[in-house]
Image (tube, rainbow, N blue to C red; front, side, top):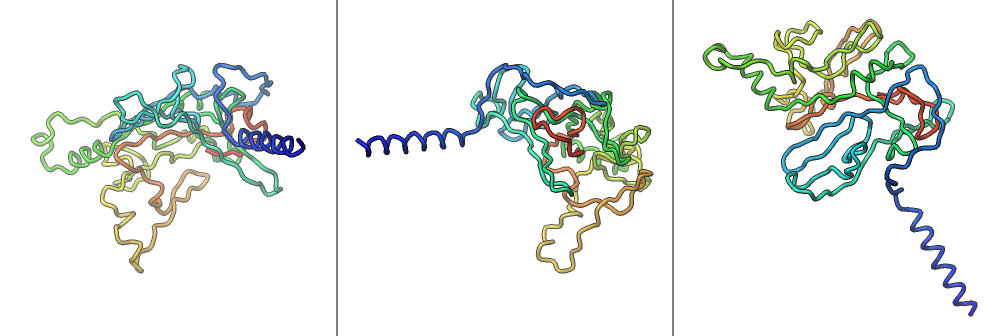
Length: 285
């Protein structure tokens, strides 16, 4: 009898440990009972989304650090393979970033299902040392900027054409290029340089009427195919920005746009109180 009870106890203990290892389940529309602290920013939670729709996959990306699911609509998983079907391979995902500060204190920014809180809001932070953001900036950047490599290829073909009237009679620069968020608002102490762009005339300002375009490395200049085995290859130096908004050097290969379709957006962890992790903000974007 003692052996039976011992085995039963071990079995229950194992079940408890295994159950505790599973990810927390989504609990429907339950509301948080936590008290949200007042902050100077007071940004609203991100609400915009777009689908990354490429090849045979279609995945929803939200602007608040989470992805692959529909939070406000209550539809659930939004990661479809094949993209024309209804089968989903993932339910949701989100960004968790944490680390120790100089005082060995843990700082964390994360989000789960936004039921118990939220740590991310749209928009760039200031570069004046406070890493702050205001409510209007959060609202302005609650969106994705979609761009495709095909649009850039067409733009470059038009730009370099010696006979645009004949070869591209109906071409006009698309909004995805013209409205590209290359620059922040320096009047609000934001970085002048946000989304990466190729500066054709080298004046430091984004202007597609002067040949500038969202920076896809079309010719692989930043990433030659043989760079790994080339002892003479030297990575380009990173972009360094002063408080005055001037830039020296260039950008690294990891800072340019990738793939055939790109969603560019920016979010931060200082738009409001960290109601998910209940801790101090990191000051990241």
